[in-house]
Image 1 (cartoon, rainbow, N blue to C red):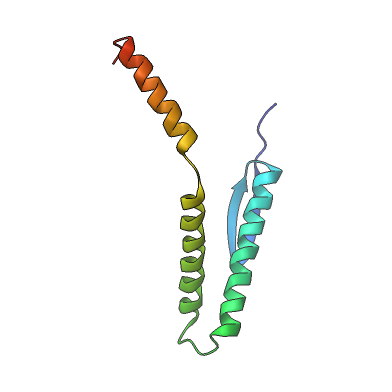
Image 2: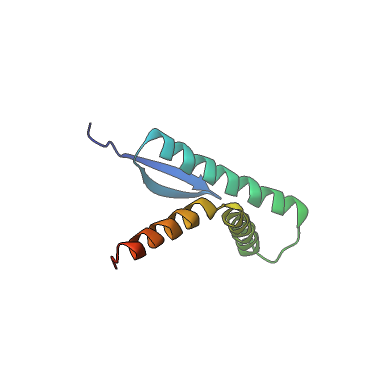
Length: 98
């Protein structure tokens, strides 16, 4: 089955971003991400009404999103993979394969 790519546009703060989605799931992901950022900017505007320019809202939204991404990455448990790699390395050592 050939991979179908779809050209889409998502809009954040009246800025249309042309994207290519390789699947309906990826299109939904892109649209959900754009919506999350737009909602985050709107909430920041409601809380911080007097910032000097729109750039502050954009940077704050990016920063909050990055903090969420770092927190999510910290929650990922890599122990099973580390254990598996240690076992493989031991096996290679016993076979004298390097």
